[in-house]
Image (cartoon, rainbow, N blue to C red; front, side, top):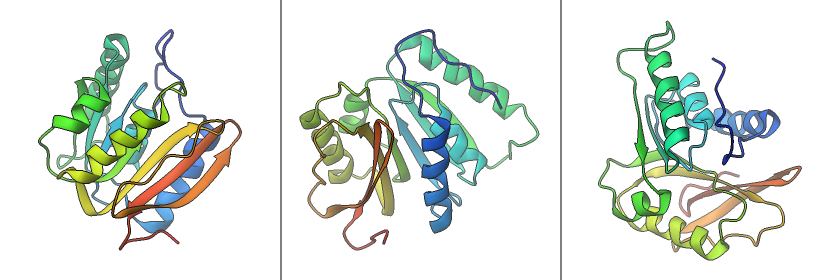
Length: 185
């Protein structure tokens, strides 16, 4: 399904990076029946791709009103397509990712995508990771997939978590962050 991109304000994940992320996740089977949280959702591409690869639930969080409206339209179209299954659910929440992570009451997520603007400060990124890992928002098998600029400082994994992999794709660094007991490698 083609996704519409807002006129300005988003930096969609490149097709090459998206394919690499999902190949990595598919090889581990973490998307099967997963609950997915897509923070800084932008176009919603990561969350929609997760649904197309076996995830059952998506919560897309986006602060930009135009981008959130586009995601909502995409999800409505998806829900009316042949690929939509009755046990799937998806919704968009218009909120700042940091505020959602710090205060949301939700069932634990299995996969969390974080794709903030490259200007998002490392300290803010580390706080966001801590808020997610320190509450009830992550399942025991959770994988956090964080995209940053390769020029940004490396994030710090929260207590009890570790960066299990880092892959660079041009200007984008992708970090896989998991509870210490799970491990990707």
